[in-house]
Image (cartoon, one colour):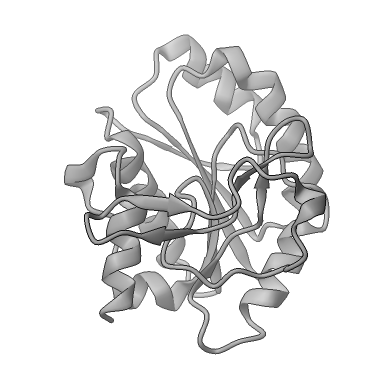
Length: 201
């Protein structure tokens, strides 16, 4: 298991302590942790460097949005031939210890899977925020089970067309075949774009 986890940041001081606390819970499951800074101010960037001392930090000279920043991280991860999977994880996501290992095991249990994501629940730890989405004919994401209580859902897996952009795990082959994110999108509709592109690969 050699996961390269990528988080992006831009002057996120208001949630910095929470981000670092969450990172400490699952960092030992990562082969490498990559932070892409979207041209934050110097004070904040220095704080990132001083705190995340074991992480690879990529400093952008411009704000590339989500897609540009994630692409920088994905390219860096793919340059390491030992990396077998790439996780995109928002810096506001809490992933419990052991969850990355479970995700990795599930991803590699099926040759037909390219990317997976956990069920995303809200901070109340009860309400579902995301359990995969269908893409409509008008290219709109239609979330499944959003707003429902986690205990009311019997199924553990949902095979779908699109996953949350800020919390997913993909085999390296996914990006090698489907390609990187479309940087023209900046930060919106990347999930729809990737979902559509993978369906025709």
